[in-house]
Image (cartoon, rainbow, N blue to C red; front, side, top):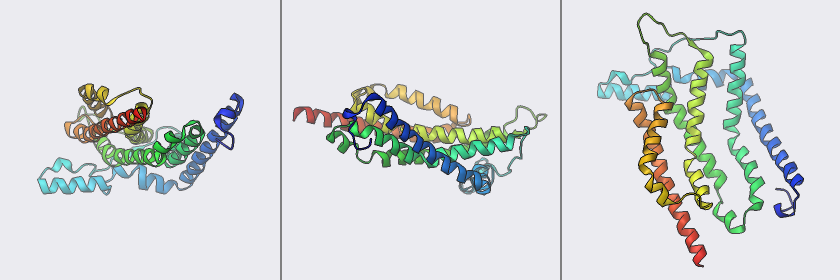
Length: 271
């Protein structure tokens, strides 16, 4: 928090310090958002609309795998659907929305850095030592989650939802805002879900959860994972299993992290 320690600062000084951290984080988001707004062709054609094209990396790899295994259904998004904007300001508002989301994603490490600068003076020296590298690992988990959501969940969701028809008499006319909301929501949701190990780490440090608790409710967690996978993916078994595996893996890692924290706390108390 600045040169004063948290214990020496008044409540109003805390609020003032927090305000400046929030302002700097907001400025970082705004700076990236402006850049994304300016380079709209790259952001939309190269990133946002890419999962709807057969040249997208995931679509090409799945199609290649489908040809090798003789499973044509793996060739997803081979026929891109046309997007429509049905509102007067639809494209402009979508442009602003995507720019802000890009700013949030790209600036996330700096946002957490500002948050960390605010709370770190309140930690004891041993707590700071144990939490060393938190910014890097939390940012890494978020980025991995975003990449997983973008490269794995998004193209499958786009293919299924864009091609699903209740009747041959009903044609799909996909709205641009609907498409953008689908891609951005599953991508951000995946980034948040990948923070599970970090959340477990801090809750274990606080003594809120234990490895025994996580092991006891492993089956319940599996059900929750399957429900989450069913919500954020197309309703087919292949997609749900593909999404469930990383979440289950993260849960098992979280148990290991919680166990290490518990052993460390027990060792500190014994010492």
